[in-house]
Length: 283
Length: 283
DNA sequence: AGCTCTTATGAATCATTGA
DNA sequence: GTCAATGATTCATAAGAGC
Image 1 (spheres, rainbow over the protein chains, first blue to last red):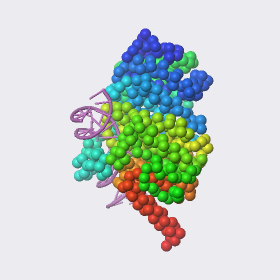
Image 2: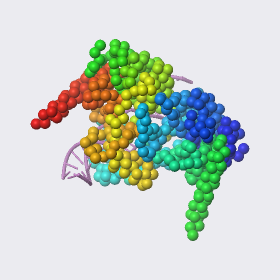
Image 3: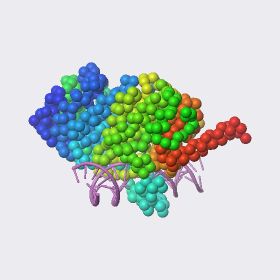
Image 4: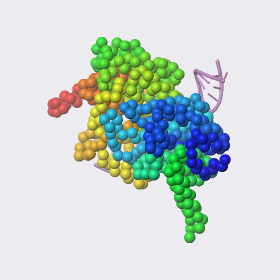
């Protein structure tokens, strides 16, 4: 089956079995959370979530290339206490063979605070990275960020100490050499992603902002690679892939979203093509 | 046994059995993480961590008042993949009767140095809140933060810099300059705490900043209540409690830290007493 | 007060070697 | 094989002092 730049209408549990093995460079997805989005997906109950997910992740493991990553954006809800199906899912995926390489935090920076009697507004979600082993593709330079404003002042005059490696006072074994930072304009980020959530998308009930898949696509795939989203929704992952010169592939169970996704991706492709032809023939 | 304003030298697994039931308003602690602090604590291996912790948490459950909270600051390490003992601990604590009410994130705005091929610097830790039921004490107003410059900055960053950077920690409400908040509108925070891990305590290998326990003490206890830390280390939790007009109680296994903690708490008490007499007799 | 400059600081991770 | 010990490598920022 040709999966490149295709969106399939149907259930991932079925469709993915037809994907060839070792064919995808990166999987990024935000699956339907438990008990949410009942109207659109029927809502998987928390106690059945893991058993529902495992057959799908088994196919994902088969489909993913050896040096690829599987990024799962998810957050358990709360009903008095936090649900535990995400913890159980992590443990179950490990038993299935996945490496739980890292947990990135998506810190949702902009929504105005709200509150309930027992808890504050939930401002973060998990972005779980699973791989097939210790070694995988990671292009850290692709996601460097501009250095903080402090740097301008700091770099003007380097003191004597700054040109020498100085031991940390606590003997933690670290040191610093400020001289190395001269002329530095970008720095590496950490494992907390600060991205504002999209609040006004009425087409899909749980959109995530394009910047979220875009960050992982830059970090964990190369140009020309294939990025799969088995719950593609309104097509956000595919749009990000197109804009970053990757191929997309996806599955969607809901007919309406399937159609919206196809339309959105077509738009992204046209915009992309237009910008390229503009560059080639600027007049 | 009188536990109020006492620090005990010994193993929590033993000492806590002597604490009276329903006697403590809040438990805040940062236990030794697995396989860390080997020199001072011997280091608990990841596969034995849960069985080591459960007898202690059983006593904590007995000791905590019905409307109290148990806040556990912890973060698993990585060796290729993330360790899973924290996930297993959450599940085990629930089986022990605890409610897993919330997971707060401590976002460390300046985190440990380092660079590796397969991960970025770890900038966050878990602050797990457990309770004995759905109802518990929570004084949300006590941790409100000012809106103003902070909000303006956010908006500005949004348009200018794609929100890759956050407002600095000093704008986030953890500083002490509360008097500067006059005339500023305050809002409720969210469940991500932005605190730099700086502290001036060179005596302990794993201090957390005072602002972290202070935030939870303000939020989950009242003045005059008792705050327990079963792994009190150099006494940070007790110091925060003293400064906020709560009583402290704690246990420490390591003799050196036990002595340091006692000394630090005495200092905090003296400072407190001095500041009170100053207020009463300003001349 | 604000600016500039100086100093301080933190629960680390991975690859390799040896038992 | 696994497990443990050892060694090599490595940032970005906050806060205070001084003018």
